Image (cartoon, rainbow, N blue to C red):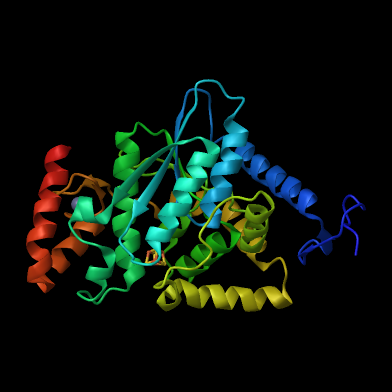
Length: 324
Ligand code: SF4
Ligand code: ZN
């Protein structure tokens, strides 16, 4: 079948929600247009900004970095820095790091790496055995704190992440099912962080289906590590991923519909439910909705459950707080 957009090349990529099949070149153009439209719609970037892009070594952040660089190219005075968090997952993150390095070299971008080991004194894989929390909960909370703190140190005005349409639809549904409407409203692109200590995050791929991100990464020849994290299949999110993929077979636009609902309802939900007082964590100084931030709560639990980690975690938390 010929591409239904240009009519010239083979239509290799099926887009069920659009009812067509397009060639590689047209797909890249369509995705680029959609990403640029999204960036303009929410006015995420301005001249003179420092833009930190969270680069994991996977396909999503590779495509996000590549397209954001292209968008920002004509804007004067913008500095782009790629930032990678090494959580300490043997056989996975080390390979991702190699691909991330190839990517930033190829795209000629400044690259910073921070690790759990340096910041918290342990690797994620050591902690998984020591806690009842799912790996992704520990990982997500500690990674978010590290990313935000380092981005702030780098003077970032904005942090770009590679979350795609599938990620976003899963997050909306998960928070909806938990009836966590405050958290749900925070996903909206126009709802600002509650504290100035949080660098605003933007997701240029939030309307691009995951499979299209992979196709674009391949079409553009971007280096990335293709395998999923070994802990991913046990996460709650993976249940919602399967659920949405099944729904999509019957309703091809379902993921777009869910994100569209967020775009309409987010600000109203924020007005109604986002009233929590944001304070600073007593221990590390990061934003917290309680006496301790979530990261310090997890570090505290780890200290109590493991004498081996106790000393390392406590000295590391002290250091981070003293540095600030
Ligand atoms: Fe961390 Fe879970 Fe993502 Fe693996 S899948 S990197 S454990 S959040
Ligand atoms: Zn804290």
